[in-house]
Length: 362
Image (cartoon, rainbow, N blue to C red; front, side, top):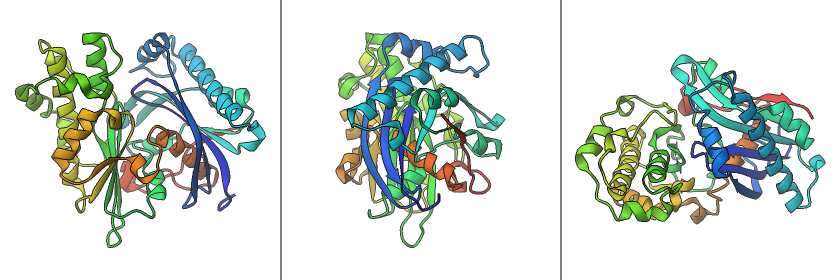
């Protein structure tokens, strides 16, 4: 199967808990990548809160199995809608990469949990499914995240390097792609992305996110509280390193106005991203941004000021920033079927390139 171009569908439900993305990719799992159509389906508020209630839990904890089944059925519906919208049949799809929902991530304990039922998804879609991407990496001593860097490298093969690809989801992570003289691949979670801002906005003004960064733009950063947040020991750890969504908290911002708290949390995300540069082998000439954070105009403006090099949404080079992670899991599913590594020492800290994923037949 190695070297053959397969048609794969990838699914991603990220730490922002905002919905499921589904995307189609034609790829050999190596250098050939041709992204196809994709779509995002938001979760309703009730299901989002049900997912939120699973955070910090394992798949065996009471009540989690019911939510995992519902999550799987929603992922199946997303796949079937993508196929219907594009006049495709299940037989046109070689594999589905099913990430599931991360509810607990403790790589220091060699534990990572993504809920979702790969066998049920295969049954519901009629397609082969690859799931459970992260477990083998963590069991081997890796961080189990981030997992999109190999896909970023494949997409960026014709771009100028050194290049940084920044994903601002609930947690933010960066992929550093080295230049011709040092083709190193380095990736790690930089710190909070949107999660704290989203949670703050929800609690203060009953909105799921600060759309466009308008709330934060009207606020003033509390420098003392920002300094306290930046004292988190995570920033002293050498990469590769990764975070759980809830490793940081906005509890220390109590008493701030909605706008000032949002501005301070954006400043935290930006400062964490800027600090990531300290670990790059050489400065990145450009930053390309994907994930929901690229739609936060205030955050993007602050990043551009702080990094002092071009900072662009990935659409500037023709990528789809909404679908990139879903595409990555389509790509990784093909790599899994071909017996290719899903992670490397520079991306997760695993001792040697690590294969992974579990396959389910319909």
